[in-house]
Length: 329
Length: 259
Image (cartoon, rainbow over all chains, first blue to last red):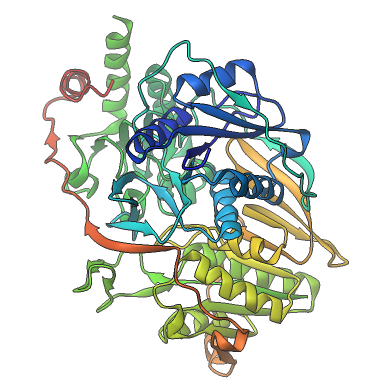
């Protein structure tokens, strides 16, 4: 409906919305309540699951606009943007939000171009100021914050995962699902294949609530098993510094920092990481930061909430042990 | 094949960045400027395509004030054949769409086979310009590519784009837009010969009017820049590894409630 706050759904490609949608819908719901609109989910998929639709309602979507069709998988920007632009033209939403993911960042950029709308990417806060929306986003390697505003609606923004608070869950809420019809644009991209990464059995880096990360101090690729053991106990993802990635110890997809992934977990534990600016750029919005490093002068201690100056090869196994004791209780 | 590479000049990561008297902008005094790292991957890839095909032209493009010529000069030193500087005060204070509109108009004029961008610039980290330019042109686009092969006939490009959980491989008909992710290649350093040769290469200034553009007001603009809120002072946990580990776990559970 006109004036709605849309959340574009990111899913697991198996018919289930990712849990980051609770955060996006939560923020959309809070802003909509103030602005006099409602939070709505817009889901483009080849197959939506019943449980997934229900989940969106429980997370606060008052209405789910479902664009379901084989053409929507795999994601192709030219197909998705065309469908969304048409729908936005009919529905006139006030805001269109999406979580940060590789494909939704691209989609939202395309949509902004099509609608002639402003886009605040990777936002970490949103606030209504009278009748305008103001977004906060880290800039210059996270050294400054920029407050941004839009000249007109719709306001387009992507939201950094793990930063926004989910709304109050509404168990048992039933989704109001509509399947609007839109034209399907012809795909220019011809799908060849998908190559899956080897499964680590650990959460995805950008979505994980806890991240354990290793740097040069690990001394070699073989020693990441020490961090993986710890990660398994606390359900963390394992990341790496640029130094560790450039040394070939970990594939690039595990890199945290300016030329890698930006993360914002509830808990970050860095082992043998000095804390170069380019690493801080990718993790400084983490809620609690712990650093374990031999060098008391390492810059990471300046932003750490807790630090242990010591040998990670001694400290990490002890931490694993302690966490195990705690979580087994 | 002609390839256009879009680059942005940004402050060096290690440079200290201060807010200027106008809180919408940074104080540029004393800043070391570099070509944004992802854009270097883009330049390198363009040069490799040309070298592999044994023919073609690589054109470096940048939008910004006069100082941007240094960034273009670096691309020429790496091996680009010529450069285009989108230089017009009308573009000042623009958003990603302002830049995308300028680039789309230029790409229409230059009509290359391929336009390569970095996946995002490391100053504002918007990461939107490549996809927006493609969308305005109606060209196919693949973001965050880790691999690329242009077919022998120069009609299509096969790319592997990075997505959560893996890589997706697509064929794109040319002309197309791609954006480079780290891992695509290892950018070369300019040789002395390259640096000397760059001085003789052309950098052409292009204004909005040269592209037939009337610059529209930005759809998104900066209200203000702010310093980061200070983090509360941290605590160094002393003691033997076993005791320190025990205390850290206790503090994370009881004080920080982080686990």
